[in-house]
Amino acid sequence: MKDGADPGSGTARPVRICHIDADTGALRRSGVTGRRSYDVVVVGAGPAGSTCARRCAELGLSTCLIEEHAAIGYPVQCAGLLSVRAFEACEVSEKPVLHEVSGARMVTSRGSELTFDAGRTKAYVVDRGLLDREMATKAVQAGAEIRIKTAFSKRSGSVAITRGISGREEIPFCVLIAADGPRSRVARELRMPRPPVFLAGIQAEIPKPMAGNLVEIYPDASPEFFGWIIPSGEGRARIGLAGREQVFSRFRRFIEEHGGGSCCHFVTGTIPLGVMPRTYGHQTLFVGDAAGFPKPTSGGGVYTGVRSAYHAAETAYEACNTGNTGDDQLGGYEKRWKADFGKELELGFRLFGIRQNLTGKEVDRLIRVLNDPALKADILRYGDMDRPGVLLGRLMKNPKLYPVLGILFHSGVRHFIK
Ligand SMILES: Cc1cc2nc3c(=O)[nH]c(=O)nc-3n(C[C@H](O)[C@H](O)[C@H](O)COP(=O)(O)OP(=O)(O)OC[C@H]3O[C@@H](n4cnc5c(N)ncnc54)[C@H](O)[C@@H]3O)c2cc1C
Image (cartoon, rainbow, N blue to C red; front, top):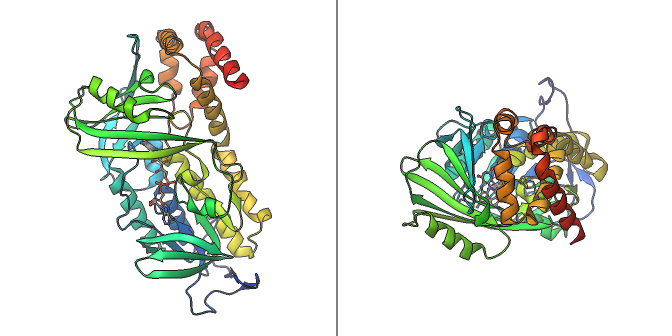
């Protein structure tokens, strides 16, 4: 850690640089062996990893960010729809923005529709490759060292062993940040219990003119989740769905129903839902998709990933500063992210469970009921992509929704007695 870094005041104060010897387990100062050692090694240069690396470097920690791919941000595994708040949290320029979105239109196969348009920008459609690259660049500008085409392969005590362009390397650390996405190798290596649900997502970018700035949602395209069509710029749209079963055949049907056409960019990926039971341990903090932070109502994980990265950086700073990387110290990370967005994820996961048991007919009825002007006004006023709990609490108080509470209750019961 560099002297003079203090997250609160920016005032200078002496700090300890700690590393735990892989063989003896003893704390030692940085750089006593021939290997370059770091306060923090971050695995994965997605939005969560780059944010964490940037923040750690800003706090004065010596930070190494490793990324297995040669090009940051590729392959893209995202629809690129970010709320205004999520985009701002990424702290990048406006260059990645391709389009603006002001609302949504939900359409069922039984013909019901629900449209809400705020009339102002609520979300951005971004070029995720560019966004990730800018975020990684910011980490480097803040002082983090980046190694691309370098994959974490295993660890030995407090040393990360990597393979890649420079062959086999050993990188000692004080705190390891696992930001290596849904299939986290770090988590598997440490035998940490994983999130309970993994959805498969698939999307194509196709030529498709769309009127207005609305995202289209198709619940029947994927009965366990939903399908989407997102305007991504002049004459183009991103069409995709996520689910647990028959994902590719459902996607083929969905795209055929909506004009098909030749695809210019294909995206596939995994969305973990339901946070892993413990997001810290073994000198390691799990952030973003590696921890299972995507929102279970939408699958969006950039916002929570970036938020978790900030909390992880603060915790890593404290751990390196005190030389204590034990669970008592690292557990502070879990308290931080839970206080920030834990309740939203918990509620979202319950709603996801209910969604699993809603029939197409029940979804159709819900949409018809929600199409009431008073309820739509609440949706427009309190709707928040990142924090749906506020809207839900509001809707529950509205007597107009009472007719469908039975549907939600019964599908909730069906979910729990399954
Ligand atoms: C089809 C689809 C659509 C989506 N749409 C949206 C959306 O519209 N909005 C939204 O907010 N979210 C969306 N998401 C989710 C979003 O993409 C993720 O939540 C987000 O990318 C998580 O960021 P992350 O930094 O945690 O992980 P990732 O972005 O997955 O980054 C992990 C990084 O770690 C690297 N890595 C992995 N293993 C290793 C290793 N062993 N060594 C070194 N590096 C490694 C990877 O190469 C990658 O760069 C979507 C996901 C899918 C699949």
